Length: 117
Image (cartoon, rainbow, N blue to C red):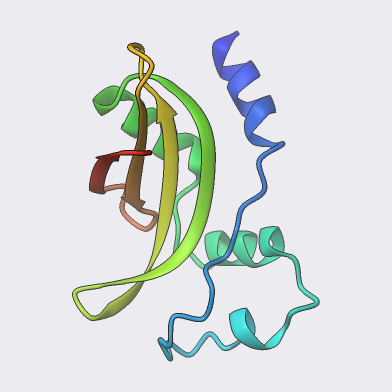
């Protein structure tokens, strides 16, 4: 039941594409097609195999960082000099702290975990 509610809630959260980070990665559509919606671009990245589905990412993160997901963003970033997709997941911990988890959307690795002010 909790999964059904979570999936329903996640469908209400818009995915956000990152702003132009100056990375020329051959995917100019992110920067040159403002009429396209972020969710369409995210879906295309998923179909190309560049990102993993958010449901699997949430299961994996939930095993390591307990709490309630209160926000998700999909952004374009750079790690080790290469462009990567990053899920930013905001979590409300059981003790009431807000945490932000950055996850490599391609392989599911947690890149950073910090308290969110």
